[in-house]
Amino acid sequence: MENQSDINILIIRLLSGEAEVNEKKIIADWLSQSDENKKLFADLKEIWLSSGIQSNADNYHLEEAILKFRQHISKSKQPQKLRINFMPYLKYAAIAILILALPFSYYIGTRNIPADNSMTTISCAFGDKSSIVLPDNSRVWLNSGSKLTFSSDFKNGRKVSLEGEAFFSVSKDKDNPFRVKTTDIEIEVLGTEFNVKAYAEENTVSTTLVEGSVKISSKNQQTLLKPDQKLVFDRENRKMRIQELTDTAPDTEWKDGRFVFRNESLAELAPKLERWFDVDIVFADEQVKNRRFTGVLQRESILEAISYFDHSRFVICRVQDNKIIIKSQNN
Image 1 (tube, helix red, strand yellow):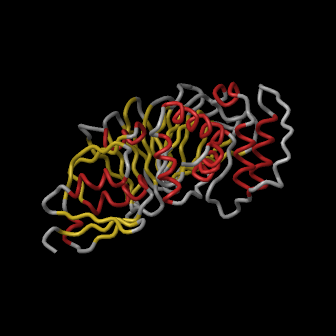
Image 2 (cartoon, rainbow, N blue to C red):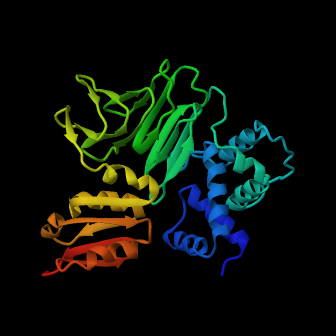
């Protein structure tokens, strides 16, 4: 049984994207023990995200990250004196001590990104999701394996850049459009709710509109999207198409911890499950890729999730290290 100091260090490793599979399981077990544990984790995650520290970046240096975190704290409306000489400590213990030294009123009351003219990047590791409040009070939910970059004061316009997937709830401002830029398209809105999916490894970029209206532009095309419509941009032919939806849940409910899928093949589900649970999925045969499923999974453990597919009479799922092996029942 890990003590609280060990848990604190594991939490920092998780937030920084460096936790191993067994460490993630320890945190999951600890979270299931009490609501107090869940509350502490949520508060630590909030202050970590509001600091703007990048995780899993090639140019990531711990010492620089800690310095940036300290500078962020010093700008807070809750002035405080931190007398911790943390550099000699082990790196994760140092960050844990620094975070836990903050008064509770700071990280429970500070939800917005600090107001200055610097660029802020928020990264969300595989197997996780995050939510942040932007300088204009718009709210963004980041899905697993995603990154959002924006100016910390929005003085030069409400502009953000997205890699991955995010759900936006944009504050209304008719004189100042909100723009989301991906590598292929740009979305412009005044105030609305919509989902954008733009993972680099996928062949399409999509925008699903829940309410309001959005204008979407690519290099050669421009169109308006209405509620319950989904725009799909094909990266190969560089063309847009609009789909009419009767249900937006499969594209949006991930932000509420539900993985919704409607008549999707395992080949289509695999990359989503890999990001959702931070695992690798391997198909033992081609036939099994075409098996289709409909359902809703909560953000439970990967073992509970794959049991849903394993109960099918057509599919067998096996766990091997950090890989999920899926094969046809008759093989």
